Length: 88
Image (cartoon, rainbow, N blue to C red; front, side, top):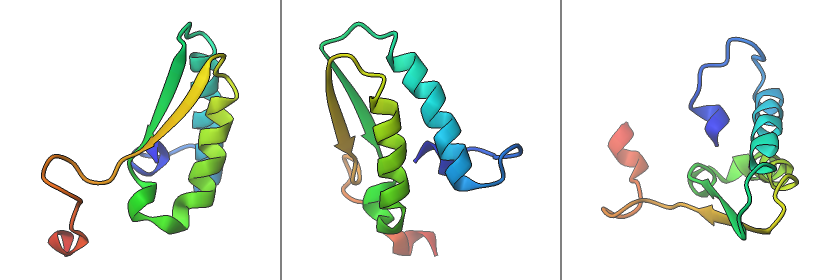
């Protein structure tokens, strides 16, 4: 979730920040003339507790898509899934 990796000096509330970011992104994707628009979500696969909020934000963004909508849930990278034990 983009909202979890930026400094929030204005909203100071994750849900309000997610909603505000989703509104801006919805306006931007509404201007895209493409057959398919895909959103990539890299956080929620490792943080299931964020699922409902992430889904709400993603759905809000997708309201602006005119063509086919797609969501990609990232899990790891070329080196495999992230190991939370590395960050202890």
